[in-house]
Length: 281
Image (cartoon, rainbow, N blue to C red; front, top):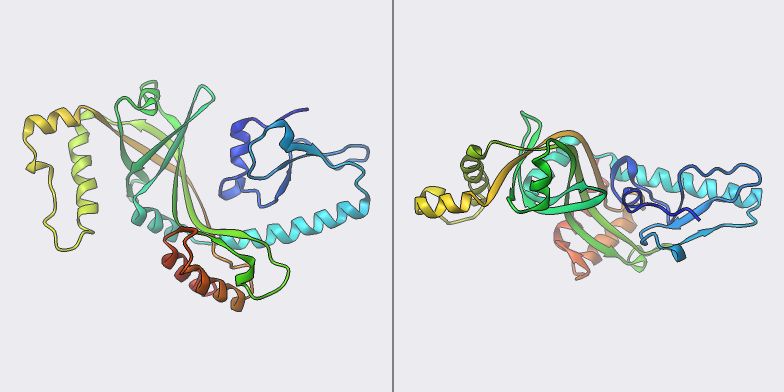
């Protein structure tokens, strides 16, 4: 029985064109042609043999029901990806922290990084520890990479909607920036650190802004040698703002009132406010 590779499975759980809203998703290359039985995997579960199985003895009526259910699900999922690019970029910039992903010899690499977005140049500025495997990978040249930025998220109980036949779900905001990742000249590292610190120090209230000039030069130089400047040239932006837009307004607002006091998730007050505004054009 053919199994999904780890990377192809990850693509079914991401935002954008690769997002799969189905709890049961057919493997690529399988058809509904007469005499065939499609292989399915359970969405969100690692691709072990016991999680890959066949649906047998499916009747034409069963297929029609599945097709209709998929159409409804696809339509509702499209509501989550109608956010304009500028809003998604603004969200990523304001968050300023994300997961940078690349692949080395079929092995996924992930680095948790602060970053800056230069919209004029269409790129992300960041740095990596010199010993990071991703930094070592970039010595061989430019590599494709993806920066995933997440924000408020939380579990939604179906009881909160106040309407029948609902199921549990998770609301969240996520933006993925994909492009080409490369090392930059080492002499750029000081200016990059200054720009990063200036951006985030400015957000702190009642505090003198920290500058690298406060450091003892020799100590600063030694620290600078341990990190390398990088650039991600943005080639694609995908985002998901899953905030209950597919629910009736009253049901979504009832859930927003409940989630602000929940502890299952992060930034619950912000998530509740986003859910309240989700019905606003």
